[in-house]
Amino acid sequence: MLLNILQFVQHHIKLAVQAGDTVIDATAGNGHDTVFLAQCVTNSGKVLAFDIQSSALLNTRNKLNELGLSEQVSLIQAGHEHIQNFCHTGVSAIMFNLGYLPGADKNCTTQVTTTLAALEAGLNILLKDGLISVVLYPGHEQGLIEAQTIEKWTAQLPQQQYEVLQYRFTNRIHHAPYALLLHKRI
Image (cartoon, rainbow, N blue to C red):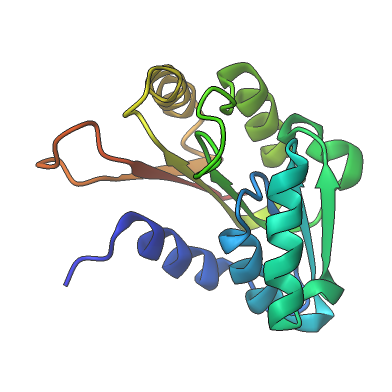
């Protein structure tokens, strides 16, 4: 009945994205969100996928090639705080899946300072009615700091310009992941 966190995020991103749009995967990781976004925009759209780890970009490239989706995707080895250097405006959706790369070094995690810079840049390039999704993982030390800080930051966004929704299961143990959706109203 209820969608898990990633299903919930994807459902809402699908509502914000159309074929031909430009979108961003701010944390390419193993390529799951990049593939999803590439399918949403089809071959007439554009996906910019960012990651600082070459292994993450390689994993993503392999998935895209297997599915014939690499044509509409640009893989960028840079931190997500640099998204505005690669895209200046006109983005309908941005996905963040924070934390560390599954199966890799758990000490290499997203950092709250760069994530906040990326979120602020993302708001600047997001179209009206665009959507930013942020999946947070408070189950590890850096993830908890990041989640608490980002929640405080989103709570201060002006409600006339942005709507922020939190989706989480409150009866899960061990600091379960949860999502924030940021909708740009104007």
